[in-house]
Image 1 (cartoon, helix red, strand yellow):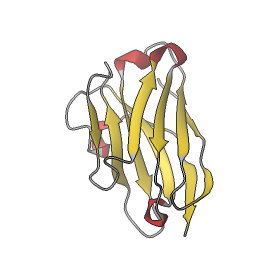
Image 2 (cartoon, helix red, strand yellow):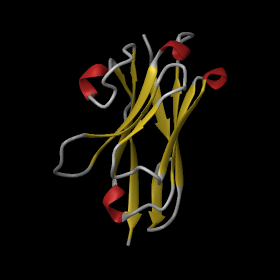
Image 3 (spheres, rainbow, N blue to C red):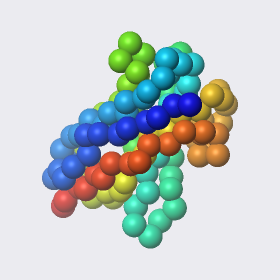
Length: 124
């Protein structure tokens, strides 16, 4: 079992930055791939970024590529999402998720554990 707790969300002006954290319980964090997803009001949940269990591979949605960076610190059992040059369309609830799988990490069906989400609001 893995429990995930996100933090770091908030209100920021367009062009600003936020760093989201996802703290995981359990001693097997390093064996899980980690992903970030988001859901805006009235929209379906969408993939944002993912990182392999080794940290050697990262994946991004086209809409955030070049602006967001996913990383992990296995010593701290924590995954991060650094978000720069934020836009109003980035406004959403952001969820982190853990997967024991190593392929197709863009699909939410690959993830077994989910956090409760953290709100990110970008004002124009």
